[in-house]
Image 1 (cartoon, rainbow, N blue to C red):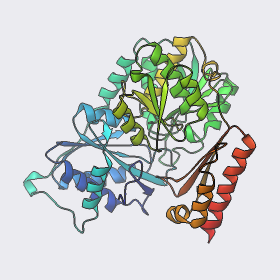
Image 2 (image 1 turned 90 degrees about the vertical axis):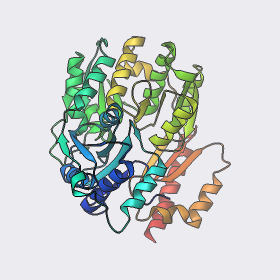
Image 3 (image 1 turned 135 degrees about the vertical axis):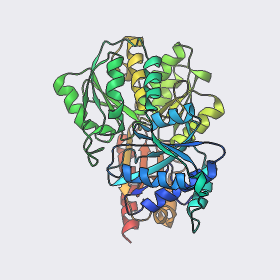
Image 4 (image 1 turned 180 degrees about the horizontal axis):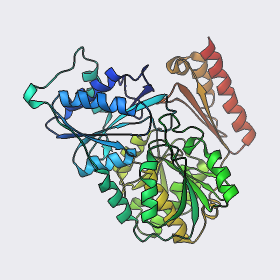
Length: 438
């Protein structure tokens, strides 16, 4: 059982749950586990004020154990994933994704993919030992700063070279890592867009902007009459859209319209899509009507990817906008999702609102309840009894789960009866509050 890694790396409040000592031990442990298999550790980060502190700590731990380090600076998580594949290297991304700047996180990946659970457990065991281990003096690793991100620029630009441009749109980088690459890529592809919220100061990442605050860019899109808006999270592995009316277009709908295009282009392997148990039933119905089968997994992009590889599907993801297109990237890539979606609009000669207007949507309520002890909530007898009551209820789909990255319990209800959906969600929110306060 994992003790440090959650569903998306090690994450916590800076200098409280996530410390310099932990980061240095991670660097040391990664080097000890992978020395001999990989010669180099690539380190990248988003725009948080704590990023350089953790970069220095991870570097120190890794070189002390004999591994060479290349510091990539501020780039998106998918950029680092791409570079680890190109360089046959292991990588650590310093980012807490959509969380505010008080949080940071450490994600380990190798050869383009997040490492499997078993390897995370091995790293944890090394981290939690009493002492770090060091290489002999003559075998200490080296450190360099490298512009390897040029490889990522070239790949994305060449992949989408010649993309048509009939639209004018707004881009919200959330004062995060997307700002380091999006402007240049969109400009070189001659796309007509304006970039917003690209002035990071170390503390304003995801602050009333980006994918966690779509109302901000929605207002700009409506007032300035853009055709649509594109939103990224802090490390740019997620992408969402808003249409010309400012209405949010989530990951389900982006996967749906892109999958239909891919099928017509004969790119859709196995005529399948993979998503999680959180995806809307209307999304599944839309795909079924177009001859595309949906497979569901537990929440977490690594589980989506595992299923994609198992059934040879090349598109999958989550409502949050974390979408993996395996014939383009080994991980969720917000820039690639955005460009694919723009291409899909051009392919069908339709705007984003016209395309997603064809997708039915069942009433769905999502609630995130902050708690002190997630385990206490989920193991309480009252919670167990309440969940059992709904196991055989076919009128509503219910999911209650602890967040893998935050001190929250997530509640999702869905069904045809909007009143029942709302009341059921509120029932569980109130129960969670009662248990948490005891």
